[in-house]
Image 1 (cartoon, rainbow, N blue to C red):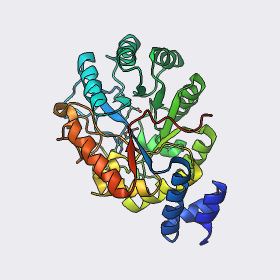
Image 2: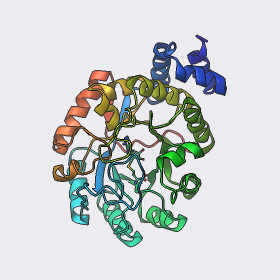
Image 3: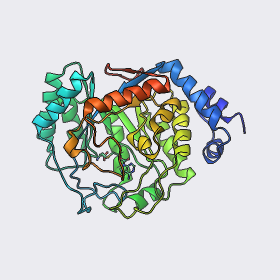
Image 4: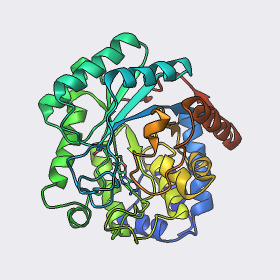
Length: 345
Ligand code: SAH
């Protein structure tokens, strides 16, 4: 089975049994990472794209069992940024060279479609050369269309797990995998640059589940794929569950690069949280995006999806400088243009 990485490099696909072997063993890791880096260089060279992340609300009407800002966590201090505060974050980010802003938040009913469109429209008018990404959960087709018309071009919505049984173990009964998947297809249909993804090492996740995630994404063909480690949060029922391992995260990142050669794949903050050099290792295994935090420092600690999140005390300028150094040390270069995908399907 030593040729598996090479076969994946050549064909961007493997059988379920081959994938199972590749994911379950560490035998191919060195070759996988080498080939993932080779593939990424063929397509994206040494470029690493930056996205400025603005976590604008931690109110959420959902109760995903793994998430620190879930509705029923009564010990979570809640906050919302005002439109002016969001625009100031963009202003600061723009000065620092950012040309993509990611507005992420819980599913907060306060932000009606009109409010979201007003904020997106204002950013769009003021920063014409920037791309706006939304990551605010499951909405109706009508809402997604309104945001798109207001100027949002990209949308991040991790599917979390493509397996129904696994999904049920991570979410309360009022949520549905079917709807989440439907949202992703709707986003693509509208014309968004669309991001899916899942947590690595989430509670009860099996290798078969990960294979389902890969198969689902082969069907969806997302432009962006976010996959970072699950990290427990003390105020959830999964407080005592294990964190996703660095080795598995790196292996999956490399597999993603080889199966989805053109995808925009971030080296996540969660990966940087489980290991001091996690993001550098992610970049070397095929990741080509970093997402420094542009949220005001006073709220950073409150957007706590999991325990011990890094970069919560730094000003944005420090954050980008630090990440820039990390990217260089890994052997790549930050580019500050919009960083559109080099394909569109
Ligand atoms: N409300 C938005 C944004 C969710 S937060 C949405 O529904 O898409 C962004 C991502 O953080 C989630 O998609 C999830 O994959 C990840 N996340 C949540 N809790 C986590 C945890 N405990 N460990 C690691 N990642 C987590």
